[in-house]
Length: 290
Ligand SMILES: [Zn+2]
Image (tube, rainbow, N blue to C red; front, side, top):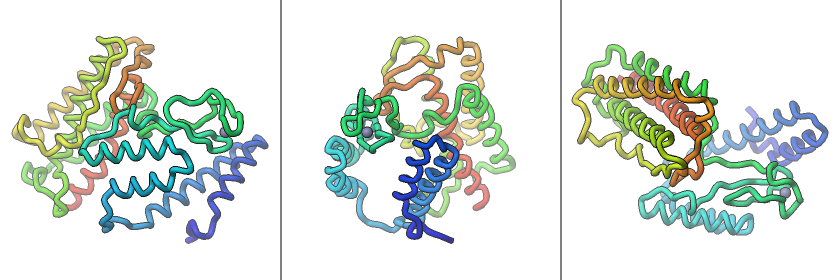
């Protein structure tokens, strides 16, 4: 199999740009996909699981190396690393969204510029880098469909499992099935409360929640995993019924998320629907491991 060493990714991207300027978009998309695939494969092949360097010092080292690319970006990385060292997530004002000029690569943080200071390209042509693709993954209809379907898929995975099997911690010390179900229930609680807030308040401030950290918290859990699942599913069905009844235009109502900046209901629904999908293979793996 050919690897990234055999193909010059920069030449590939340069070819894509030339093809785009000729209007050859179908050919350009193949080159861009190949460049992305090669970069990701190389990163995937670079097994760093055993590495000892803490993430914070690696970010600081990268920030120093990137200073010449964008001092603004390097500063945001350093601020974010300090937040991480304090054990919290960096907020949107500390780590604003990046935009990259699709023509020349000029990088800016915060709002897209009106005009590229390097090549003169119109700001609207810049590429926005969202913190996670989940925000834009699903349109409203697909998001609702997925939010309806995922609990059914989870139920199918749990079929026939005993409470003991669902509570058993895997050998790597990670989450048991029960923790994953509790996590889905927690995330559902956040999205349901957030959607109410969107509809009651104008431009609400949406608190950043470290939902991930609650999964092993047993303080307020119902006794059995199936009861946690039932609470999750019931809240989901209620939320879907509520959302099918609101005017479609309300999906574009926005709030200010402490971590992600301006977000719409449409983006929040897509986010939570896409997020859940990433936990299905995790449950599947644990079921197989038994
Ligand atoms: Zn430019």
